[in-house]
Length: 152
Image (cartoon, rainbow, N blue to C red; front, side):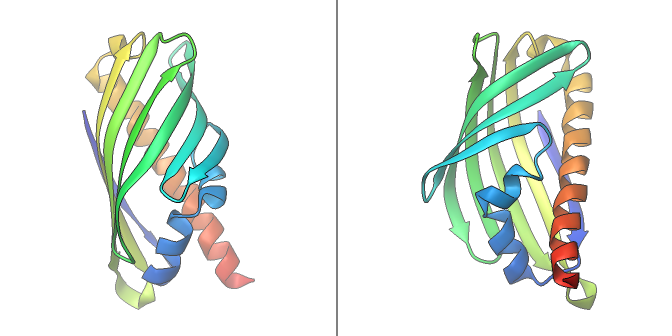
């Protein structure tokens, strides 16, 4: 399933890049993120709670940054599973940052996501809708944190 979207942040691209690659800040922006642990400069572990319909799934994820081109692009691979192995997720992700009007930054995101197991049974339509909702919540939280910090 392909997930993509974009949003504008009222901050310069270099600042947005620095913050979007900051695991501590990202933990507070990712919906359902309970924990992020830095393994090394390019690898992170995260625990994320996802709710789809009546099902709650807690995923243990490993995120590996595969390419970085500051301040324009980050590519990563995410893999993980529920503790019970009932659902497995993997994704190839790309973030592109481009200058926008008024010194702002446009953040474009694209992911090719595979979900198997009990969450995978919900079907493409429902999973895509949930992923889009999570993307919108992330954008709102990230934009809020960056723009609020710029005002301080």
